[in-house]
Length: 215
Ligand SMILES: [Zn+2]
Image 1 (cartoon, helix red, strand yellow):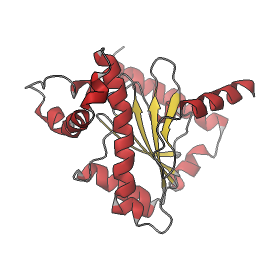
Image 2 (tube, protein in one colour):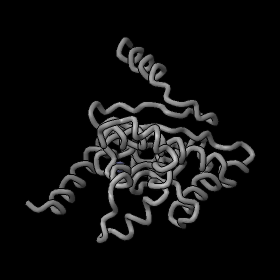
Image 3 (cartoon, protein in one colour):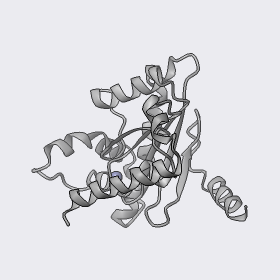
Image 4 (cartoon, protein in one colour):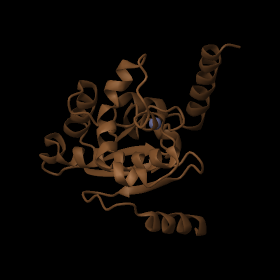
């Protein structure tokens, strides 16, 4: 069976099972949305926002692009942010990057001439890498450099979002969070929480995971 056909059959099964489990689920969904969270993540197929946070339809307003970049000059990004903050009035904006990000890795390599759009898109990442050249060069392996740049990229997008008028000028501004997802263990590390980019709070995250496991 081809992939689209299988997807449509899976959709049918999901819709039936969901309606069977909660008869009001779709009537509720059809009434409108009031998500509390805007998720800005990477387009990578391995980091689906709803799946990795166990969220449901209606929970997250989602914008995904290569390397989870917030680009104030991009109408796509800006229209999503504007609508989320001013109309949906989300309480939280989460930038979620991930380790093993191909877009971040590409910014550390010579540019491919047949990917002009990607090259333009990741140009800010190349510049960010240059600004942190000494720190990145301390890592011998390309993958380690890319993973550190993925963290720095999340913190940079948090900083840009916090400074943007759409976020900053709302009477009660949404909290901007910086997260990074580990493909190797499925866990999210918190890099920045709320207004302050506090650096990597691996200890905090470890405590959260330990307390969840103990519960
Ligand atoms: Zn990625």
